Amino acid sequence: MKILVVEDEPKAAGYIRQGLAESGYAVEVQHTGTDGLHAAANGDHDLVILDVMLPGIDGFAVLSALRTSRQVPVLMLTARGATDDKVRGFDLGADDYLVKPFQFPELLARVRALLKRGQAGSPKEPFVRVADLEIDPVRHRATRAGQRIDLTAKEFALLTLLAQRAGEVLSRTQIASLVWDIHFDSDTNVVEVAIRRLRAKIDDPFEVKLIHTVRGVGYVLELRG
Ligand code: CA
Image (tube, rainbow, N blue to C red; front, side, top):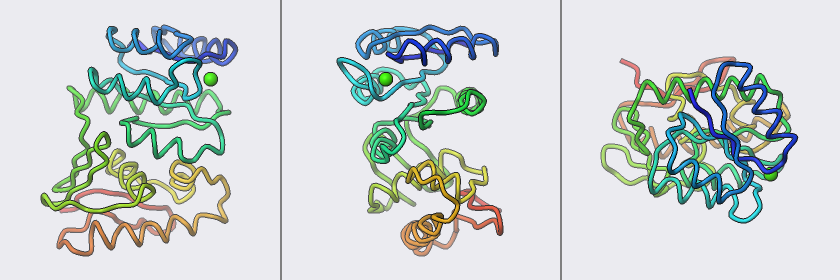
């Protein structure tokens, strides 16, 4: 498994490279957006770890350009507090996010999950499909049974997260962290409110419900027979 790391900070790049290499991955590191894009677009990496803050062209521009040529899974590294980064990255077709600073085991867990997902559904499509729900992260469009559903940026980010991890129960804390960059258990009420709004658009008009509450744990998006 080959992983491309695009990170300008030598210390962070070295830390990621070493950790991944020790876990058995072949790692290539690029330090600028331009070099990173060139390597990603022309390489055969199984995953790209892409920092948002890069000199020259930033991570968003790299992702945007890359998505016109290759559908390699992309894990973006965003700065703490930059909530809009996640929405923007999702819209551009990022597959997952990790907020800096992070613990290496967390990065490794995301890397493994993305590589597993990539293998299961190869060749990887930019679309996310669960039953009759379709999400196009690049065009920022969601449809159910062919009907266009209007969503706010946050609702779209939330739906994309749930759909990309379909069948996986996500806790309120996980969702709050990934979509809102909130890291306190006490603030997860925002998740409940958003889920309610999302259900009103995604599930209420349709007979088959996709978003399910797992009592005491969180939420899962899946088709239940
Ligand atoms: Ca950086």
